[in-house]
Every structure is written in C-alpha cells, then in structure tokens.
Length: 106
Ligand SMILES: [Zn+2]
Image (cartoon, rainbow, N blue to C red):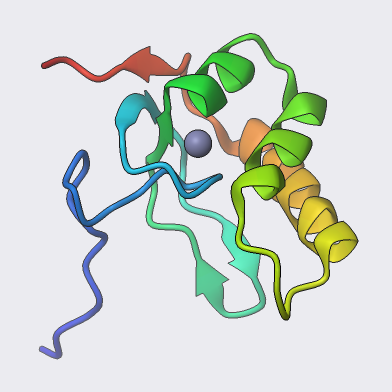
C-alpha cells in the first residue's frame, strides 16, 4: 500500500482559509470531494475564515470572489483571472456541500 496525500487536518495554523489568505479559521464547510481542477481533487471539508464563512453561510458566493482576491498579493497572477477562479470554485463547492457551514468549536 502506498502513502497517499492526506488532507491537512482542520483548524491548524498551517491551513489558512481556503478562499483568502486569512489564517484565522472560524468555519468548516462540509463538502464531498470533487475535482477542483483536472487531476486535482478537493480533500472533502473546506475551511474558511470568519468573513468568508459568513458570506458562504449567507449564500453570497458572488461577494466571496472580490473579498478573497482583494487580500491576495498582487503580482504575477492576473487579478480578473483569480476572481474568476474563485467564482468557479464557489459554484463547484456550493454544488458539493453536504450540509450547512458550521462554526469551528473552540
Ligand atoms: Zn477567508
């Protein structure tokens, strides 16, 4: 049996918000694994910071992309392209959610 890549554990300092660069995780988004990009599967549940989680909980996927990409470092990546990617991601994730987003219990 070969070692496969394990999803990172939830709510660790090493795992930032799945949507922006915040490292304060306040929400868990239950989701079934799905193909994020060709040959790239999401590990299952997603994590989000307070603000991103609020938007997802409210179903405001359209507001998520501008918020998330605003925090990304400007540089090589194309801003509009990045926003598009988050929108696509949000659409795919919303279809694969297995329950309501819930707050991380501390
Ligand atoms: Zn976030």
